[in-house]
Amino acid sequence: MKSFLTAFIFLVSFSIGYSQFGIGLTASHDLYHYYQNPDDDLEESTSAGSALLNLGIGPKIWMGNNDFSISFEAQATIGLFGLSVKDYKGLGTTSFPIMAKFNFGGLSALDKEGKFGWSIGAGIQYSKTELYYVKGSFTEKGGQRDLFKTYIGQLGYGFGMSGFSAHGFIRFGYHPDNGARSFNVGIQYDFNIPKLRQITDPESEL
Image 1 (cartoon, rainbow, N blue to C red):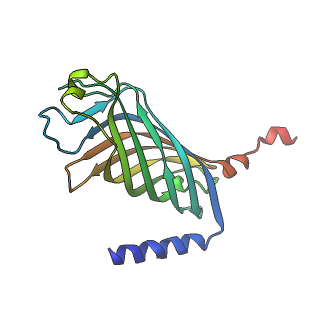
Image 2: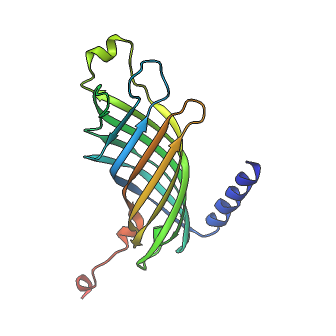
């Protein structure tokens, strides 16, 4: 753990050595996600999933150079129709992933040139299932769903240029103490606002 922190601090310091910074937004569309709550004694399914209308948005910052950057992001996401198919108890899912990422090539968000790139990140995610329309029979037996934490890792690959990128991602999460799990796969969109403002239309300068 100590060696990991040392390497991370070194990379941050290296990245800061380049005077490029960016701030903006990240948005996502989960093609599918799956959340498994911590183990309980209710003898009902502790999981829920969703493949419809899963949207997220949040702030993001970058620091680095044209080919490499470190970013920090947080999102609030919602799955409007998330549910447990096995034991229906209610509708809706939400999650709050918070991550640090290493971004390479086109996903650095700091280069004007269009190219492909990839990213790797880690952090924590808070998730919750059964947000609304919860069955009375579930609550009567003492059932409730609270935010639960998982430790997450994410891989992404896609295309970016001039402060914008679109990339596919896959994210896994697990908590070793209570069996909680999370899984998200989808498309993420990043908007580095200062870089986007530098885009000009040559025809408008004639």
